[in-house]
Length: 550
Image (cartoon, rainbow, N blue to C red):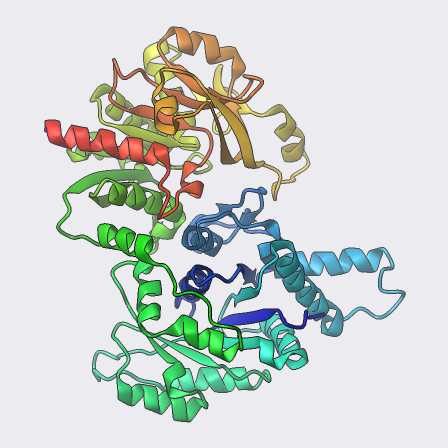
């Protein structure tokens, strides 16, 4: 079971979902890591999906792919960006994973004929996975975020697993409840009662929070801190104000002002280490939040935006952050506009894109909005607007080029038109069997693959090296039968797999276009605040050059 001496911080949510548990966990991880403690972060998602790969992005946000190829929740992306390092498959679990493991063990008689039950067997599998993550990472502190909200039926077993670890080693465990304090418009007063109820609900599981993080539109005043401390049996100094901020990257700096890292270390009875070195982080935050910095206007032409009357930008979260990182590195401010590709199919003029300094078509699946995206890509190519295509955005860039430059008017991807006479983009051979057998989950080309870059190309100039590794998530590839005809027509495949079978990057020469480039992989997944992705940075440079010319 739990390892004596290893430290655990469990992060839970109260009152409502999306309250900021992931950012709180990421920020604590950054601060403790900067103070010299090896940290691993674990995300627990209570849903029964085995991974996040089969979920609709307009409902759940983007799927973040780890280096290993595991498809995970977007919080894992925040963890990587804050810690500035890759996470492992051991750092993520879902109820589906846990139950699948327990059932497989039962089928193999690993429980010795016992009646297998939620408690203890499922709960113990959760504990085992938490411990495995700590062992695999060789960490000193595990920060474990339990998804959902206290009181949800789905996450009760995970909270009980945390309770068991705490019961065995009470000095090694602390609980942080991230809860929301509303300020009703007709009252104008911050209300603590919902959080009090959340704490009582958590108490019913046998768990007492050591820290409260008070999320609200406004800073927490001293009176509310005192009220929460008394009502929830939490020390007043452990009630942390977590107001809305301009940028999520300001959160660790706010926590540092409240001396949070040292308080966590004290409660866990760890020896104090060096002061957290946040100089580089402060410089990044200052650049990323500088409202006076010249703006670069970027259009993201996608389709996972509309959800009822609201826009869900989380579907493209990593793309948004990658743009911001590169803009900040160039001391510029990214102004991002959402452009729904479906509008171009309904008659809206694609000429609205002329005002932007750069255009991105991100990844996606299915036929909705595809012809609208192709219109946008053609407009970017013909009007020499810097264009960056990501995964599907590269495939459609090649389809557009085949149609309007190569002359293959019926060019398409077989993902949309299985009977097309010009299958410029086709399904990978090993993927056909998966789809025939309805094996969709976890069967795409996933995770890190090597890519060789040609000399004298935009891609090679951006990376400044010959061999790179990037993360993938797709089933379709450029059809090898069309590679030579496309190259003859002027398209450059500047990045390929080592065997030169798979085309990883397509671009146009700078002689004919300032920046027209697409990647089969997802470079946004490896962009970090302190190490922006070179392709995004090169794209922003091209966008700035267009702005200067205009």
